Structures are given as structure tokens and as C-alpha cells.
Length: 518
Image 1 (cartoon, helix red, strand yellow):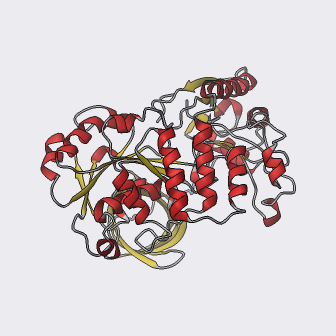
Image 2: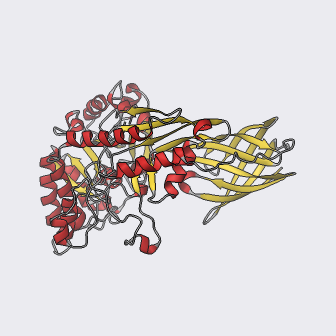
């Protein structure tokens, strides 16, 4: 969470052998050379990038520390028994992170999932084998402020999600069917009747475990969530700790943590697919050890100095203003720099500049961009230094400066001419996905070129709004699904009582659609 800056740093070079890893030739904050040259990614047609955006899984999170690479490489040369390895690794991780017990998981989402199953079935092999079809405790309570896309880790266990919005509701919903309470750590969870400490206190009265999702947070010691009374806490390994990307940590009460391991691979239970290798175990242990040795204040100063360099490169340009965004909590705890300008003066919008940086050489991804032709020309982009490396700030600064001073030519979008066609009515919509066909219904109202209405999906429902320009239509919606949203943008052409076009669904990709008015 941020108010107006965000968190963690980039690291060492890619390495070819153990000697190189053991004795890194560059500091952990040094940029990798040859990002656009010949490397293992460019050889298969994939372009590496400079990460000025943050620890997003879609862009592979963080760069692991040299010590993590070393540990993973060494671990790969040995065979060990996993039922001996995990308790040994978990014992040291737990001591370092301030908990009774710990295991390594395949990311924080897996920690959520195996914790949920452990709270449902414990280590009873009959109950674990009956998952997910038969459950004595088949409900998980989630405060409304904690619903998020990552609570899929709970949902995938086949439980009923019970939302609560008040202390009274929480007390009334806690019952024999309640396996666990899940909370997403955030500023909203730090205050009010449904704060983490208050929820933990109430749940303890009923002996119901509480899981706190602290995926992107810095793991302070003493652990603040365990101090508040949480039973279990989950962390991502591939964010601020810069461990293996496919690793996480589950901390907490010993019997439940051990039951979570019982339900995970290599054991033939519900979590058999969530396999953690010896490499991830030892890499994560190395990352945790290093976390408590790193000079975090120095890292914060270094990130700020990179942003100041970028700011200094552009702040003298016409209409440019800058602001620093400071983190609100322990997640993604680093400053960010937002650059604002008037695209009428500099001839490029923030969205156009973000696209230019993405397509440029070297390829650069920044945190966000705003601005749209022709009506929203006030523009911005945001730089997150968390996963950058020393030297990359100069590359980013030069690329942004070049884009703002030599933008090239951008045309306003072509607006179809003519009176808007009439599209009010009920429409049967067919969507052809990569695999499968969806059937929806639109009910549309029209006022000139403005369109409003409803989108009745196969399961969920949303409000539609958009424009008709001559025979071209654009409709958007934000379809709320449990813990998440699907953002739809329908574009197409209308001909009488028929319409067709493409639909963009954000991270879920694109599809084609056709519609017939009844």
C-alpha cells in the first residue's frame, strides 16, 4: 500500500557456475550486462527487461540474492530425505523469523492453501484423503476488507467463504463449521473492530485458528502478527526477501504447521501438487538468513538516490512536476517517484510513453502511466526502484528524458463519423474464448451516444457503460467475483440487430464476440 513511494532491490548477475556465484564479481545492486544481447532468453525469442515496476509475479518477481543462487546450486548436487530436510530448515527459519514453527512452501498462495487444509483436516489421513469432498469443518471466515484475488488459496480447498463486516457478525458466524479465519494484512486490517488483534482475540475464544496473509511484507522480529495473536502467517519468498521466486514461508503454531507439511508434497494428500524441492528449501533458508543481515536503511537510501537521479534528469522540462510516494505499511516498502506533465506541451501521454519504454531497447517496465488522447492529456508515470539495480537508474532516466524531449508523432484516435446507431434493447451475446464458448445477455439503454446497461454473465453480473460513435461501440464493465474482478472492454461494429467485435479481459486475455438483438 502506498500514499505517494514503494519497496526492495535488484541484485547480482546471472551466473554460469558455482565459482562465479561463490565469488560474485559485481555488487548485489549492479545491473546485469547484455540484457538485449545474446543470452538464454533472447535465444528463445524472449526479451528481458529492466524492472522499474516492482515485485510482480507476471514479470518474475525479484532477482534472487547471490547467496540464494549459491545455496540452490549446491543443494542440487545432493540427495536428502525431505521429511528430514523440512523440519531442519523450518526450525532455523522459525527461530530467525520469530515463530514456533515454519515450513517452506511454493509461494505464499501455497502457504494459504496448505494452511487452510491443515485447519480443515489436521493430520488425520482419513480426512485428508477425503479432501475436498468431505469436510467436518467446511467454512472459512474472511472479513470483507480482506477479500482479494489471493484468497483463491482458501477457495481452492472447496470451503464455503463466509464474509463478515462487523464484530457482531464475526461472533455470530464463528461456529463448529469454522475451520479458519483468513485476513489480508493491510492498513484496513490494522484498525477498527475487525482489526487483526481484535479478530485474533475473538477467534481465540472459539479456538479457531487465524491466518494472516503478509505476502509482500517485511518480516519484522518480533513478528507483529504473531504478537497480535495470529495462529499462522504466510510470506512470499520472491519479494522483499529475494529468495527463490517459487518459494514462500508458512509460520506459526507448531501442530498446524506440521499438519500443513503433512498435507503437502511429497505426501500423497491434497497438496501433492504443491511440490517444494531441496533447491527452494535451501535457497529460502539462505534468503531468510540474509534478510536479517542486510542493511535495510542503506537500501532505502540507495533507492531514493536512484529516484533523485531520474527526477533531476527531467524536472527542468516544460510542465513537468514530480512527487514522491511513501509506503503506508510493510508491503513493498520503498519510495516511488511519480512524474507528471502536460501532454499538450510535451506531445506524448503517459500511456504512450509507458508503451514506448516497453518496446524500447533496452526494454523498461515502469509501475503505471496515465493520459489519453484527445481528452485526458494531463499525464504521468511512476517509477518503483524496489527491483532495480545500480546503473539502471541512468538507463531509465535517459529513456524517459528521450521520450519526453523527442516523442515522435502521435495522432489522435480516429473517431467514426455519423449519427450513432440505435442499440437499446436486449442482446444475446456469444463469446469465443481460447477454449470454450460463453453465453451472456446485455440489456442496454441509450441516450444519444451514451450507453448504459447490465451484463448478465453465465454466473456473475455487472453494470455496463460506454459510447456509440456512428456504427462503432465500446462497452466496459467491472464484474465483481468473489475476492476479485473481471474487467471487460467490448469493442465492435453494429449492423442492424447484429454486432461483433473483440473483447479484452485484462490479465485473462482477448476473445471475439457476436451478438443478436432480440
